[in-house]
Length: 238
Image: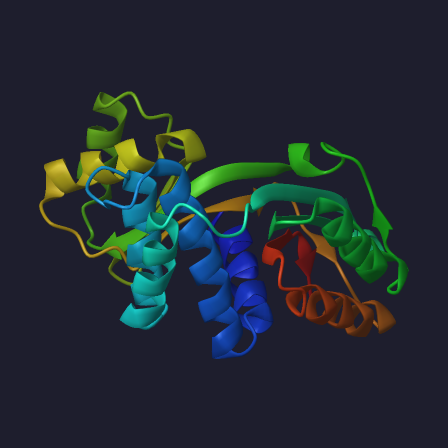
């Protein structure tokens, strides 16, 4: 599992793009989250977690505050989440999460990325069953048994847990994200999570070689350039 996570981590580092792109994506996501669940992070746990992740990614405070203030006004764009699945270069599996105010435009833009790179967009469920939709929590520590026991006692169905380089990594169902964080904090004390997010983790990998690698990188670059694309998940391995 750790290896799958590392592949995902590397791909996102590669596709993150310029800082302004990162700020824009976080700003849009914070706006949608605050508009849907309220602007108070204490009462909107999803917003609180999102703000924490944004700060870890060095998103400036003014970007975060601007998005929240925009949601406070009650107007603005009406973004909705959309997800696309398909097969990328070399037959690797791809999931693309978007926030869009125009689903028709977004679909056409994403489909163009597929067609221009000899890839095939599919319908919902085409490849997602080959991924675990999991939360990932990484924090400093070595007492893996204490962390696992606390999670099990809280009836959290832990997917995997591992310790590397004095850090514990917990994989749990995405539906237990907030519960897992609170359980670990209650059991181990205040925790500074190095990684705190929800991802699609591939159950297996699809090795790429030769021209497929170059085409795949082009595919990721094209997707990253789209403002509506928030995250790209895949099982490609090099």
